[in-house]
Image (spheres, one colour):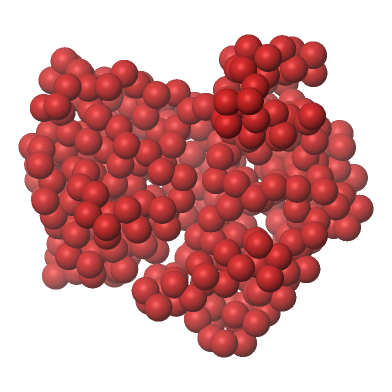
Amino acid sequence: MDVLDQLGAMKEGKLSRRAFNRSLFALGLMPVTVPLLPHRAAAAPEDQATWFTWGGFDIPDYFDEYVAKHGELPNFATYGSAEEAFNKLRSGFVADLVLPCLSDVPRWSSTGLFQPIDTSRLSNWPDQIPELGNVSYNMVDAKQWMVPWEWGQTSIAYRTDLFELQGEESWDMLWDERYAGRLGSLGGGGDVWWCAAIKAGVPFDQIHTDEAFEKISAVLRAQRPLIRVYTDDTTSLDTALAAGELVATLAWNSTVVSLTAAGVPVKFARPKEGALTWVCGLMLHAEAPKIDRAYDVIDSLISESATVALMRGSGYGGPNRKAFAQFTDEELSALGLARNPLDILQSGHFGIPQSAEWDQRMTSTWEQIKLGF
């Protein structure tokens, strides 16, 4: 039974965590450096705000200011993909805050589930990097719908000792038939579909057309037999990459940061065609039950200390300009970042908001492809 199979067995209760850890030690891996599950903070009392966020962002280091003010961490609810979060919110789930990305803002805000954010209530707002959120669809009638928090890239993480690179780094790496069954991928269409568009040569301003759907679907169907696993559980991908069961996978910056720290020879590719770039941030629910404390959560997350913790711990760029003074240019480069976010964001392909109908069609098509249709 390999690591990916053992991960599944452990989650189904068929394999104990201790037994799984023994297998990692046998591989020379340390479970503490490649955790099975994201770190979760202890549950906070009912009077605290609730942040609905990607799994793995429920980290105490981001909330020094909030804890200093309220004595407890906020509550956390987590999800594995933007589609999962959006569907849960539309079905009636209410949290004070949620973490979508900029390209989601028009579709999410159009539902009436969110309210604009009053930045005058944020003490750390003057220290924010303005370029991160200055786009037309985040500012409607001079109202701020999302407060940017993290930014980075979706690209290819690969084992430099196991993947024999032929020529330049390219999206072709995830379609390399030499490594059939040893390639991995994130599971959500919010990343995969757009990266496949880059591979297919589809300009993002044409991604909504029927021709684009055909081209992207074709390259994803061609890739399907080569992929060992599609998953929103990035820890599974990281662990399999560390174990050598995967030689390359679609990934975010954090994969390379965590595996490099664990001594795994891994690199984050800079595809010649360009990577997928993104900015994600905080939106405020229209019926936020703890709205005052929700603003305190935002203020804590965009603080200097939280930005440093985010960048050092995950490799994602942060929003607070003061934090960048604590990094050298060499350190930023090693994280795949730059002192000016635009140097990274404009070097790749930035997602363009699409209609709800497009998203439904994309998600449905992608789910069929994953099932082999």
